[in-house]
Image (cartoon, rainbow, N blue to C red; front, top):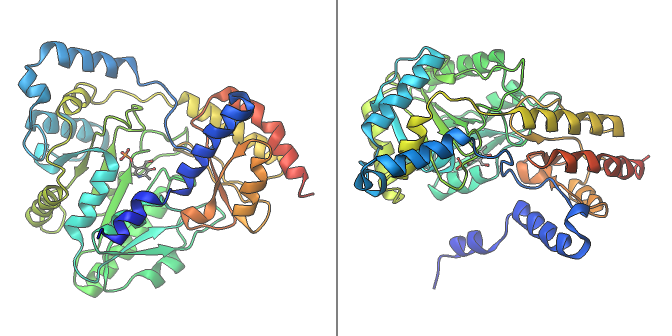
Length: 394
Ligand code: PLP
C-alpha cells in the first residue's frame, strides 16, 4: 500500500535521534544536570545579533512580496551576485550570481547535486567516518554509496584504499571538511593529492568525476587549520554551503551550491541542478533568509565557544586515557572506544549519563562521536565521569 523504503526511513529512528530522545527521558527522571548529552550536532552558540538585526531590517524595510513571495528557482539575482562577490573576495575566484544556486541548506544542496549527476549504475564515494545521511541522499536518487575505510591515525584520506574504490562508475567523490564526525580538516596536501588522482582517473575513464564539497562547517576551523577552497585545486567541483552551523541557523534552511564556470559543461550541470531542484520540489530557498544572508555576507562566525569546548573535552579525554585526534574544526570529537564493540561501549557510558554515538553509524566501528556544541559547564562536569568510565577498562 505504501512504499516500504519510505515507511522504513520515516519510522526507523536514526541512532542519534534515539539517543537524544533517551536523553530527554533520562533528564525528566534524574534531572537535567545529570545528563551529559553529546549526541546532537545542533549549534549552541546563539545566532549572531547582526543576523537577527538583518532579519528585522528585511522585514521592516523590504516589500512584503519580495520577502514572502516566490523567487526564481536559483534564488534572487542580487543575493547571488552579493554572495559571489563575497566568495571572490575571500578565495580569489571569479564567480558571479550565475554560478550560485540558493538552497534550503547543505542537505538540499547535496541531494540536488546527487540527483543532478546520478545516472543508472553511478557510484558516489565517501570517506569514513562520514555523515550517515549521505547514504539516504545517494540511495534516494538511485546511486550507490561506496565507503573508503578510515585512515584512523589522522582521519585524512587513505589514498591506497581510495584508489581501489575508484571505478568507471564513479560519478563523484564527497569531501566533507571540516568533518562530521571526525573533526578533522583536510590539509592542502590531501586536497592536492586527491585532485591529482581524480584528474588522472578522469583522463583514464574519459568522463568527469566530480568532487562534491559539503561545507557546512567551513567557518568552524580552529587556529592553524586552513580549509582549502577546493575549486582552486580541482576543476570539476560543486560546493555545497550552508549557514546552519556558521550562523547557527539550522531551522531556517538556507545555503547554496556553487557551480564554477570551469566545471566540465557548465550549462549541462547547472541545468541539471535546476532540474533536480524542480523534481525534488525545492521550488526556491526561503526568500526572507536569502535576503538576510546577503546582508550578512562576509560577516564572521563566532567559533570561540567551540574552540574552548573542543580543547576542554579533548584534554579531558586524553587525561582519562582515550586516544583521539586533536580538534581541528566543526564541533565533534571522534575518539577510539575502549572496547572493540562501540555500541557496547556507548551503552556502558550511559550508566554515567554520558550520551555518545557509536562510530559504526558513521562507517567506522570501534570509535564514538561526541558533539561538543553544548554548554561548557556540562563538558567540565562530564570529565570526571569519562575518567570513571575509562577506569572500568583498566
Ligand atoms: N552535511 C553535514 C556533514 C552535516 O553535518 C549536516 C548537518 O549536520 C548537513 C550536511 C546538513 O546541514 P544543513 O542544515 O545545512 O542541511
